[in-house]
Length: 113
Length: 113
Image (cartoon, rainbow over all chains, first blue to last red):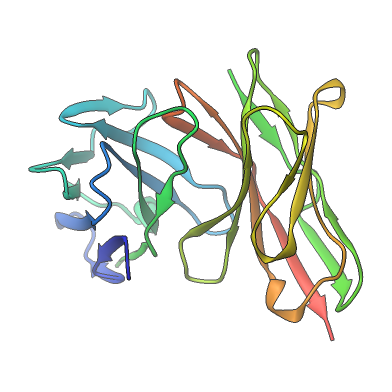
């Protein structure tokens, strides 16, 4: 059974048109993460939530926002997508300890036209 | 700041041959180390992880990795590669209480039949 679900798997948006990506988890984990992975590059952490506490990476552009309305769901909002934001966006979760595995979803491939 | 280096961008091996993927890390404290595998268009799947104890770690799909503190390395090995192992492999180190993974740039594995 899927544990970390991302919708949609593929998203096409227009330059400057806001877009929201969705992630849900059935693991009841405390922590949810969003990563950006550009072609042939390593995943790069954008931010994470520990419960309701939001932790933004210092180099994450202001164009990227996130919401976590409850334990199961987390959203990534891109307010004004640029061509450089085309990437795979990966959601991950873990229970919150240093030794805990991060479980990844299948990702959402974002295309910006 | 922590960092991970994967010196080999691409590796090609014949099916049935042995495999070693290199990973070097830089981290001030005791590292938590991970190897993930990513098939095309998919999320990341954990192969194995090291936190403490036995420096030789066994993972899924017949993979193992050895932690060598003196060399700051955590190389991934498999004695006999299968065609289905063709994928991208990422080494990662956890910091920030385990809530932040820093990935290497990945090694793309190709398996020749």
